[in-house]
Image (cartoon, rainbow, N blue to C red; front, top):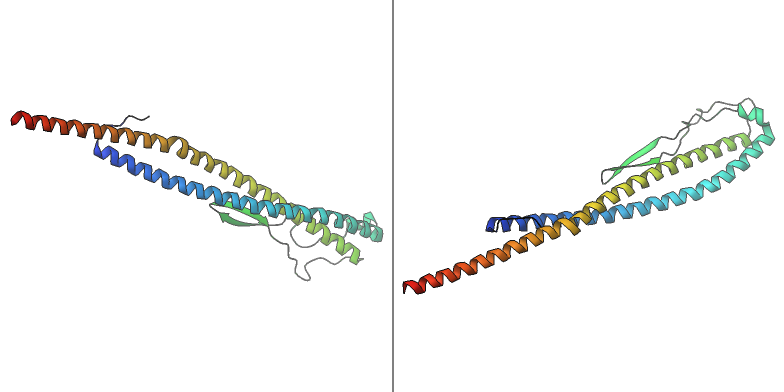
Length: 202
């Protein structure tokens, strides 16, 4: 327990300090709830993307098989790629000061993709299937990063909240209780001295 001189000003300072700590604990407790809620939302998005990735992987494998059957592997390897960026660009947002990322949906304007010598719907479908596979993989990777940042911030907030609740607040409350008890004792002693002085002067 901290040593504090038993004065009225010290009692007021301890009371104010305890009030501020309780407000800080309330803020940290609310922040924990918000972080937990966002982690659950990000986890649901991650699970949905994982399911989509599994389905897209199967679709891409089928599209690749049909395109290879139509063009052969050698010709398919030189089929023009889409003009959209190979690596999807991330979209940024902030949640309680933390950067949240997700992969931006790829958009390819008409006429941007180079024309093929021997175009076919099978090859175009294969290209589109693997572009979606790439986007889903990037989005999942970014959401894993979001979950890691949220979990790290949650642990940090949890440590601070517990330090306030279990260590600092009890210490201030115990010090305030001790100061108030000493002040009450001093007041009683002063009252007794005053009475004795009054009787001695009578």
